Image 1 (cartoon, rainbow, N blue to C red):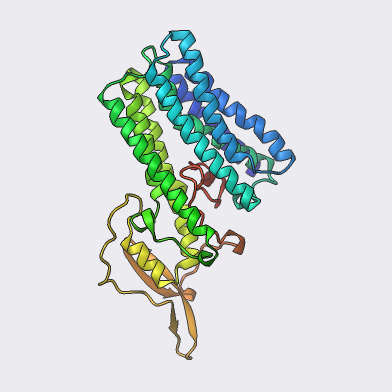
Image 2 (cartoon, one colour):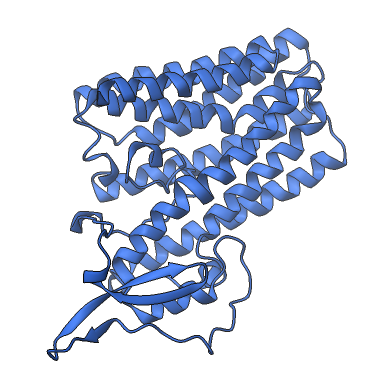
Length: 358
């Protein structure tokens, strides 16, 4: 049953990406999307044989590079529209992919493994599904640029282009700064098992996600004046990234792990209350907010651990015996990894959570 489900999810992922590519009406976009999936499926074979995930993220970044340069090269031959704007966006995306790919590859090289894959690698169907989902991620995230570059006009240079360029630079800068701050924080031995509250992380609990979303919106504006008719389906690219990071993969997975580690830490709960979720904002004044105790005394005089429950912006503590189901994570999963922009954030509470990395 699980094998059939994994294969069905893989088929649906491929169908979604190919359908959107067909909807653009551009054969080159269809070919690029198919190429993105083909690369993942080919890479899956040695990865499964040798039971390794070390090249998963690197393959994703290389796929971005291959499909975007493939689109630029063939569009210049087919439509003779190798303009400066096309080259600019390809260089921008290449910069992003190289930076992120090298960052993630060095991280896994340092750590020795990606713990998300421990339960995934032994299953051929689940591991194959994970690689296929990466093909979906690459296809949808690059759809704006692929469509615009491959269109009859190429990327049009106007006010939207320059606004998009500014947004891309802003988002890329924020994402890189957030990753560097987190890496520097974790490199200090004294900070082991601690959470970062300095720099951009003092104003946002996920500043790297914010940078990635801004960057994607910038790419959309860089490309949008090249769209016509059904090509506007490409607007799904930044929407897809934002929804995946905020609602599906990045934030939910990270917050679940963070609460597992620090729910009983009053300083962390205070940090959550005063700090914006995504958009970097000045810390809120929570001096009037009551802190939930980490334990309570029962009638026999014994301390009982409490579970911190969140309802909207209110936190309350209840005895563990009154809370039937708690998220259970192994000690091996107690890593507060929120690095790597969009591609680096999906930690595994299921294969789908591997999607959002960036």
